[in-house]
Image 1 (spheres, one colour):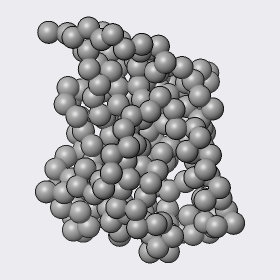
Image 2 (cartoon, rainbow, N blue to C red; image 1 turned 90 degrees about the vertical axis):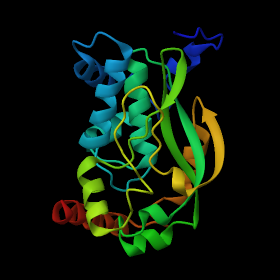
Image 3 (cartoon, rainbow, N blue to C red; image 1 turned 180 degrees about the vertical axis):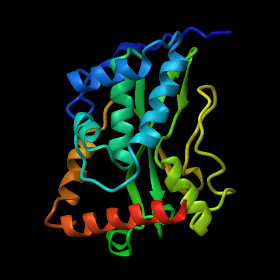
Length: 226
């Protein structure tokens, strides 16, 4: 049975500076991904698997959804922002869920220098939620399938810690539940937080060389471990 919501869902369809869901490239990709879909669930699933696997996990600076789509890689912030933008572009309400997170799930997944540059508790870890069949559902796209298989194979993370990265469009999926230290709730926009984090992650403090080296490391792990 579908539960009718009294919540004003229109706010979860609006663009923001980072979640630029009215950008034409975002709109075009969203329509392409959902062409032929008959339900919002089908649309959300197609968008989920596109962002999860076609936007592989690698570190980046915080950029707009349209820029992440052009780059074709991202991390928790940029992947969730792109996912939310694509969902909003096809009129599926979507929002951020924010948590404070231990950095341990990144150990061995990114290069040591990059890992050491993160605080022990990452305070800007979001994932996406979308509104389907009368309720909000988490649909986290953090790690792509090939990288996840490499992570399992190398023993960096166990299947007990991350049982699955697959989503069925009906139940909550949050990849990093085991490492959450504080749930900060859901948000229509995280633009103000992202601007603060941008200052912390600017090239002067978090060098482009370290970021590029780390992404080469992650890509090598992805290719060798699968």
